[in-house]
Length: 514
Ligand code: ATP
Image (cartoon, rainbow, N blue to C red):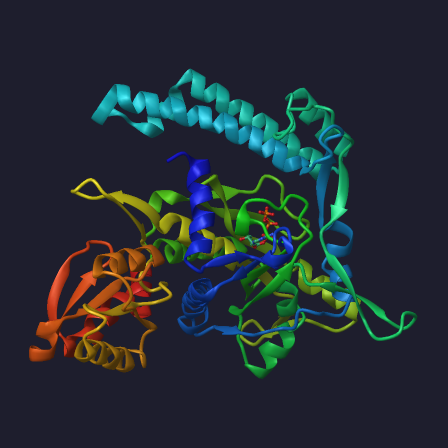
């Protein structure tokens, strides 16, 4: 399936199976805002829990907090967001469409990268088993030419943005002949900066009301609480503070479904360390976070690191973990070495000391910070899109199956009485549901032929179907069918709990990080 078709299928499947709805749909929707439906809310919660367990529960030096969305407005002066949380935007004069200037250039480079991939595929075919990809891309003249072109463009873009030289960003777009992807027009305005924070007001009367922002990241709620947590938790450096919560950005270009939203959720962790140790911790967190992703078994080749050319004002090193989304490799998580920038800024703006006394070295210092920051919605999209497959079966029919990692699946098992009208079967099926629901999310489904019910549960991502039939009443056995293999086994009802647990238990999955 072409990537664009695949992405369309992801969006429609997410709606049809109760995962994601457009916000306020009956009023024609609100752009780049989405609601999580009955299954989506469960999947999202399971992803959040999987992250929280790996970060907070499994690290005895990381604790979690839940800071408010509203913060004192000076927070955002100190953090640099009021002055520098901007995106460079450009308008097309003919189509009146607005774009992020940097994204136009990056997309142009992605097209050149597509050409590299084509060359690689061609060579792979030609050389067969003897093909060595690393050698090919480092020696083939055409590939090297493409790569050099990409590097030169991105370097220039990085430098122009760094130097706030927006005229050069426009010049670059014109030199590359980039056209509006929708209309094909090359009639561009100048590039301007646009602040991404949403403003609101606190207070009743117009003259005393205070201007506030909806937080554009959760991290600042951690920085301003650094000393409170360190003291009350008697935390010793190195230690981390984690939190999950909503963030808001007035994104200029907000297409691509839940990849780029105006209201979204982040899962962030700030790790406070001794100055000078940031390189080691940067490597440690790169490695640990990648292992977390890989533990979900979504294909090791679907991840890659992308080191930042242009560093944010606070960072001395930064990388993205990119994931192979239906529209190509894009940022899923950021890992940033933020130095002591944030704590120092908050010290300056608040006039309060935010330092740590290191008893071992007998010295006071402002800790450095390593941050891991992942969008929960983007992770949701990664999991959902990667899991959705159309499988051609031996008899030539196609089944759509959502192969979610079982640990994340909203419903772990569906219990199906073979015949709806047989009261003994429905009663037994309901008893099994009542028993299993203490531990797992289970569903009861009696409508339609059993084959159709299997397909429905496959498409909804349920790892197990348990079928109760005539034999069940006699010997207390049922069939348990596995979503991915479609294998069916006859087991005793007493065994169900252990069979399901083995496949959905968080411990079994997180152990894969070892
Ligand atoms: P991008 O370059 O895609 O705009 P960013 O570099 O601005 O992302 P960060 O500020 O590093 O993103 O935010 C950390 C994480 O939060 C990102 O890796 C992403 O997963 C998520 N995120 C950021 N912006 C959005 C958004 N508008 N919608 C959904 N998730 C987002």
